[in-house]
Image (tube, rainbow, N blue to C red):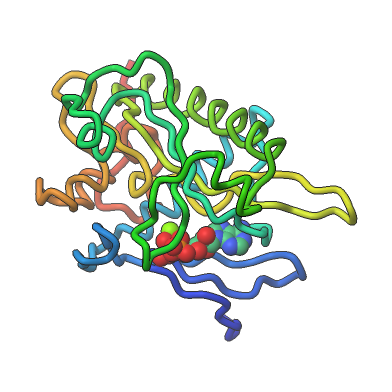
Length: 252
Ligand SMILES: Nc1ncnc2c1ncn2[C@@H]1O[C@H](COP(=O)(O)OP(=O)(O)OP(=O)(O)O)[C@@H](O)[C@H]1O
Ligand SMILES: [Mg+2]
């Protein structure tokens, strides 16, 4: 593979210059971090699974008309994406209480919320990605009111799609986070789903047993993270070609 210019190295991925202007290559690493990188480890195979799973979700979203940055998967760990201007927000959608909302409001984890709640945190590692109200977002110019209306609409479409897909394989989508980017076509700006959608950025619980199949397995030391992600991939019929866990076949 030709050497590529590294644009950015984050905690979970590396971005390289893409083959065409306006494109990037996203490389999925095996590194896992939690609690703003206070907890770190290398989890064998995580990057391969997240590359596949993110491809699966982004492709599904495109098929129902939700715009994303995804162009195509290149290999086991890399995908080609449109370069976007990332809005510096984590857009979080919650269906059931878990994590910070449970702490903040004293809600037992798993409590159904009256409706999906969309909230935002400001992407700044040094500050620990603080929760911010719309008022801040607009006042500081990170996004306009029109952008926020579009972002909520996008986030809720992603939520409906992801909840449905997961429900179909016996998994409850408790919450997730997405990042949104701007793409400019001359003076015309569009908002698209960017970054990744994977068990790193969702809370996924088995419908029957409540077993956690997401990054909480790592955050809370609940077992083997690769096994959990492999389980999600296996149920969705998405697995790397050389996976040790073959795809189950239906016998009539
Ligand atoms: N299509 C895209 N164009 C430009 N930047 C992108 C695109 N998709 C994702 N990004 C950015 O690429 C980086 C991906 O790396 P990674 O997820 O490892 O970062 P991170 O350690 O979580 O740090 P950050 O706090 O910046 O998200 C993120 O900063 C993300 O916002
Ligand atoms: Mg990230």
